[in-house]
Image (tube, rainbow, N blue to C red):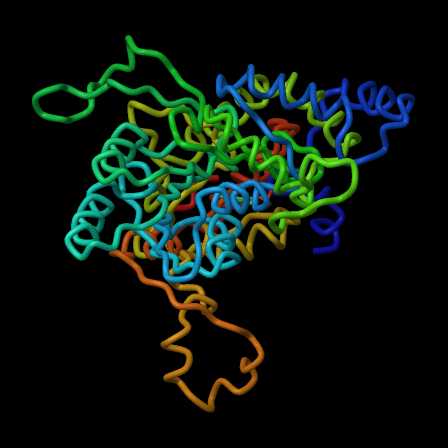
Length: 423
Ligand SMILES: Cc1ncc(COP(=O)(O)O)c(C=O)c1O
């Protein structure tokens, strides 16, 4: 027992510096721009924009801040609905609440685990009939895989609803439009032809995160990107306390202190240089697990549709207990015993107590302990797919500094738990 505890901990997705970061940080120090804003931030924004091919970028303190500013720009407020993926992280949807609007959670499709465009279409049609369209749609690019932009964008265009892509987990991922057979609408088998676009391309705006666990990190930070200069200019102003263009401090609207520090932008510049390498390594890690585990009964891997080249931020598996021999929680605990971190798939937003405002009230006095925790109204469209993915899904360690020995430890830990033990 002690022996296993002494083994080096394997984390889910720890930071992995490339080597140049410190040089840039030193440069920032010697310029004495130890401040939010500064030359490193300016260059980071430009280099980032060049990388993703979206014209205007704004470096911020977090991905959540980036989403918040995008929604503020769209003027979302009380009485409005905003559609979002149910299977996502809270930071994708909390800005809807910050602005007093109501989230509507859309279920996932099986083929990509991302927002189901058919459900989205149906719900938009029904909302249009009631004359109550949402103010925005926020599809998440889950675990580094782009949502089906081609279909989601065309549905939203039909109803003239803006799309803010939450690509927080998907920097470095690619999407290719036009890989469908014209007549049937089915996917072509091959991925030839067409252009691979970066995660977030083509949306009204896209949000990225540089949180410590992301494919590249600035310890904490985010980026808002858009081809709409007006959107980024307004978001830039809001991110700096909405200061007007006067010598003194003049304010015509309320803003935030959301800018990225010059020092953190220096880290970001170094990290951006190794992003392609990181994507390659993450995809290699996914393939390693797949090869090592797919012979086991009851194990499935997150699918990748023909239009997608995921960055495989995290390798995610589904465990079917009846076939595998135990559920994903038992596997998680077994890995934990081996000092290996793994994590359940995101708990869908429609299952989160904080979004069950009405149901919670109806439960009455039994929930006294929670009386100071404010809950919020929401709606869900479907939900069963996301629930199933949560119940069976486990994220495996996917840090890009992992070597084969580390991966083998994880593989052994999982194989030990199956009924058909093949070590
Ligand atoms: C899908 C998704 N959306 C939003 C966020 C929020 O980003 P941040 O942590 O930088 O605020 C994250 C990650 O943390 C995320 O995974």
